[in-house]
Length: 488
Image: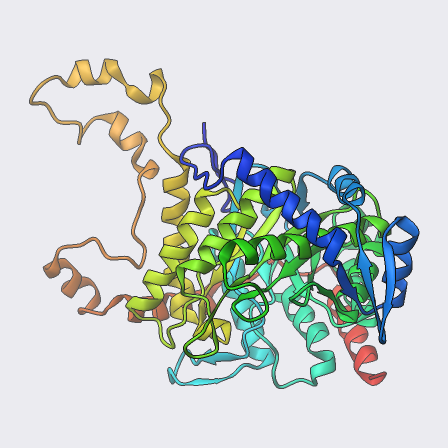
């Protein structure tokens, strides 16, 4: 049977297996070959020392180090990593369970532009925009956690991550994923999270944030990635290892090559994580796609993005490791038919493959621009995808043979109590319209989907109030932010 909790589906209804067991093993062996023979470039000396002490071969290469990781280290790391992770939230009712079969959704990350809700013009994002977007994410039940969706572009670059977290923790009560800049930003953000939870012990018991650490393709663990990964794990915070290879640019032009390189990058980060803390909460993240070789630009609306994401999701399941896959962002510049098509086309296969977390709602222009209407429309599509992958429950109760006998040939189920009792089991349109043309004109004056979605966003901002912080937490968080900025 299927169940839903916090916008989360147990995907036991309809599934998608794109690789045979032999193919999964072939991909794994290919990734292990890369790590052992090609190696990964590591920029941070502490990370190199950890990997070398654990058994990796270290070769000095200019200012950096080439680290070759034997297969046994990969095998041990896979065996020791946590196989299920709870994404705890400030509001316990919104805890998100990352375990086999569970699928949840959220927005894309760190967009620098936004289509203004009033003027409909594209502009740079601000801290106030962060506050508004996170309130809407908090209100939408189909979104299981909250990403750093946009950038507080009116703040100094060095303090933007900390400003973003202050906005996230204040205006949202779901679990938070955020990229952190360096060890100091990790330490400040962890202190903010502890203030919100009532203390460091409470945070360690229920870590409410995850640090997203991006590998640099091809095959490079840059200083920022290593520094934030180590600091986050030492502080007891979850880590997500994100790879973003571009097939034909920073990855091989063949999808199989990009898939195996992306996997090697994940596994390299995973091995480093396990040298810091065995059994740590680490998930795989992927935004690998193609470079459009005609334009030289990243293409996120292309089917290849979904194909690579689906492959990484299957490999994560092969290892029993939770995963977070990017999908649903559009190459379109406005919330049009292209945006809707690219969201549905790319998200559905990844959801069917059983990826634990899928992020991309609200994203336009290859992830540079956020739009409120697209978020609302994507959210409704997400609720329909949940319905689809739940499948159909086949049992005595749901087949209702006695009811069919009772109604009989030529009868009607419409007025029966059973129909009334199960009305909410059917999918419902919210901004997607199912009325007749006359009803549509009468109820909305003929407004199209985009207009209705913008109105829905405005209504949420007018009425939704997130869960308040603990007494004194807001002031402590503000003090930590001011202290961080004063020492830049």
